[in-house]
Image (cartoon, rainbow, N blue to C red; front, side, top):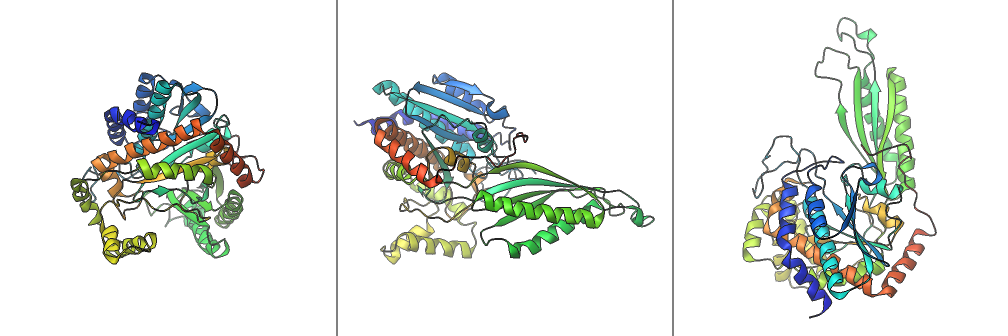
Amino acid sequence: MDAKQKITELIDAKKEQFIAAADRIWGTPETRFATTESVKPFLEILEKEGFTVETGLANMEHSFVATYGSGNPVIGILAEYDALGNLSQVADLGEQKAEHEGGNGHGCGHNLLGTGALAGAVGIKDLMEQEELTGTIKLFGCPAEESGYGKAFMARDGVFDCLDVALAWHPMDTSMAWGLSSLAVYQIYYNFKGRSAHAAAAPEQGRSALDAAELMNIGVQFLREHIIDEGRVHYAFMDAGGESANVVQPTASLYYFIRAPKLDQAEAIYKRVNKIAEGAALMTETELEIVFDSACANYLPNQAMTTAMYENLKEFGDLNLTKEDQEYSQRYYDSLDDATKAGLITRARQMNPTASEEEIQRLGTLPVLDQIGPLAFSNATSGSTDVGDVSWVCPTAQVLIGCEPQGTPPHSWQWVANGKSSVAHKGLLAAGKTIATTAYDLLTNPELVEKAKAEHQVTVGGQKYQSAIPADVMPK
């Protein structure tokens, strides 16, 4: 038996602890940096498995790094475990229904993401013990990927500077190597303060913070015509000034996400949005406070490492889906609208240009896709991730594992409902095997590490990583 087959057996031998951890984290969904319960299964398993664990990295109480081994190469594996607000959902149900009204939910599969990374770290550690391999494995526990960007704070503080390379993965509705970039993003609070007054008896004495917030939003709508096509600007009201229409609202607060393919482009849009906010405050004679929350960089896929990881994905990323798995997932496919279902047929045709029409129809209507997409690299961008900051520090690769119902999007009730299923569990184990076998390649092939490093230097063009988060901004 070769070493990689040993890895899969080692992970399978301990799969129940990883599955139990994933389900436990699903049951305690926590957001941003407040992952008090979600981090506990990691710490318990890592201590039992003989890793040296350090907590509280980069001023984040619930972050950690678990280390095994010594010497080079130093391989980082990235784990996440935060959830999303207002995405509570009853498990395994084929319709949207909150388990706890207004509660949190794992709508991006981070209960799987973190434990899949954990499985990979334990799997390669067990093989290193058996084969007496040299090198260092570091599993990083990273809170607040969804909002707040724990890895960006960790990168700012030099936590990843010790790494030669880094590996990651993400649940998705299709399996493939991640050959795309991502959007850089700034997150900012705009807090307006006015003066309350009776809205009918003395409106002239009031200064409406809500008016200021609404004027700011209108100004940003006009700005959209004058930013780059790839730019994205989103906002939410955090405070609308109260519930009484008979009071001139004295406070209002907006939370803005500003995205662009590159950090300097996001910075340029951010400065223009600030001017609009200042103008809105001037028009309404209110006070403005701009509070920088966080930021993350665009992702740089390392082709040398991603190609190596893709080869392992093809060999060890099979979910071995059963008829029962597909029947279970049918409930989520059935929840999709006709346009989305038609789009899946189009995607199947694009991914399989030489396939028969019968096979295209089969692939496009499967509740869970049972194929691995082709390897491709592109300058296109999709979403945002704080893995981007790690990728500026060292060569980074990641894969997607198709353990979510086909056609369903991240941040959806379907992903939460699916989070404790057999399909989800098979996904985290496939991810662990893909990560661990890629780590083995890096441990035993110094040429691959050097090739990845050389490519990374070309990609960053000699630029040294510099965080967009100001030095005085702390995780909160």
